[in-house]
Length: 262
Image (cartoon, rainbow, N blue to C red):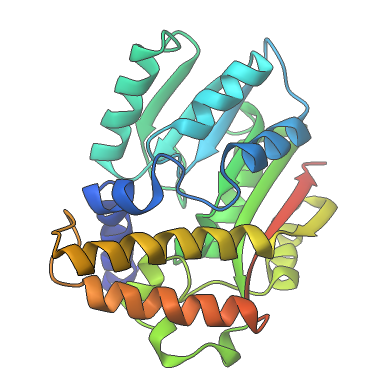
């Protein structure tokens, strides 16, 4: 991994464990909220006695939801130490720490044994991984034969995105290195998966950007300081507005991909 890639990963991990992320996104750091997570979890076809991994789990909301809805055990992996600590606290406070555990780890080098889990969930995170082929290969490595991957991610037509959606700020916002949905499918296929279904959920992304933009506008109007964002509120507003236009133009979206490990 290059120094630039290491820097990007560290910045993303810090940003998504910050007060600003909680203020702008709540406890769900992805479009579609709990309803879309439920669809992804059902697609894994797991239940009691199974164990899945939630890659880039953030504060742990989806991992806890998966365990609650299916009865399976969950391992949440995230690069942010603060985020993992918050997730561990959430599991303990809900009495689910017997089935849901969280560890600090890199999606491009998962701290799991080969063929050790019965399903993998990855929501709105692959776009932030510098080594996407490496990350999808890791997902394939840790899954048992026949297990499924439920992947949801930002999609983009990079050649049509405006200048505001480039650079580190847009990368942290899950936009700068987002790929077209067919390219995501190719990445997963090349990692050894068999694609079962592909679906667009662009409206969910548009709704999330609208909520973020409203909160940023309110913070600027009130002169509020957003922890972790500091004086960069105007930059964040510019990114949100450009992203909203890109969604409307069909150049930015959100996709769901379900695949199985042969």
